[in-house]
Amino acid sequence: MLASKTLIGSLSVAAAFLALTAPARADGEVNIYSYRQPDLIQPLLDAFTKETGITANVLFLDKGLVERIQAEGANSPADVILTVDISRLTEAKDAGVTQPLVNETINKDIPAHFRDPDGNWFGLTTRGRVVYASKERVPQNDITYEELADPKWKGKFCTRDGQHSYNIGLFASMIAHHGEVETEKWLTGIRDNLSKKPDGGDRDQAKAIFAGECDIALGNSYYVGLMLTNEKEPQQKEWASAIKVLFPNAKDRGTHVNISGMALAKNAPNKENAVKLMEFLSAGEAQKIYAEQVFEYPVLPGAEPSDVVKSFGTIKPDSLPLAEIAANRKKASELVDKVGYNDGPQD
Image (tube, rainbow, N blue to C red; front, top):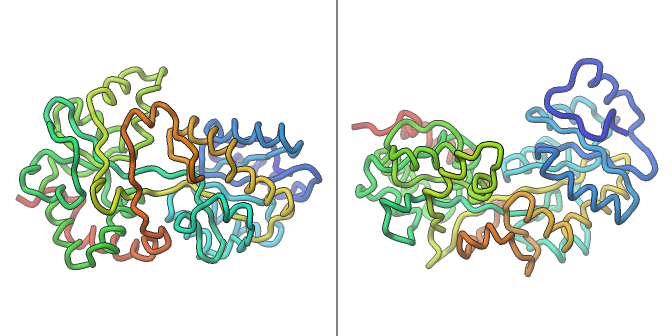
């Protein structure tokens, strides 16, 4: 088992040693290595334990998850990997720390374009890479990604770092749809529309709109829900209330979406319990809990998002397979550097 039920942040040397040397296999337990914050997934795990009697131990890491499993080798206690973003899922697969799983139940619950063709990872929820727009200064209620390069937005557009995985995923999808040459032109256009150099996170883009620093921004849909319900930092409610969510390309191919997901660890010592957990996470109850907890969209067909997320409007997800998007991420990263995206507007 893991050293404790939930380990937050960087482990101390003593705790790390204990976690590595504790016996990995334990009847009635499953060990989870997670990039997702423990408070976001704990309601899911509580429901799983209540239904199955299996104790779910969580090791949370803010970085280095793949490297840790590699270092642990065949003795790794990891059974299930939980993470966000297609880049981290494909990184785990490419690093050889996952194993393929062919499971009729999971494959029935999760559409093919939200899972690895080889069965090494599976999407659990989706989030749209949407446009945050000022309610006061942007009258239009629809937009396309292509339009973000229109000079009418010059000095009115802001984003986080172009190399961040959220943006790279979107840029990779543009390559898939338009090719490298057109995507380079597009990236140059949106770079020149920036009001300032890319910085901060997605919530900071909403803050910038609230402050009048820009009129539109790229951001993930779920952050709006997190801001609207943030009781600890009520100023975030003001930021979120100042923006509306626009779903790009709603009238044609649909909005780019990314995923949170799961994978079966290569040397899972509690494989049977791991598969039970993965089946549970893909099914109705867990999909509902997950959607309510993190303000994301369930991947299970027919499962409903939370009322807060419904209030944003209806999302039409781009059906482009995420594996195809992942294949373009390296090219997307190279184009970000080539056009000097993070340097901001050039004139």
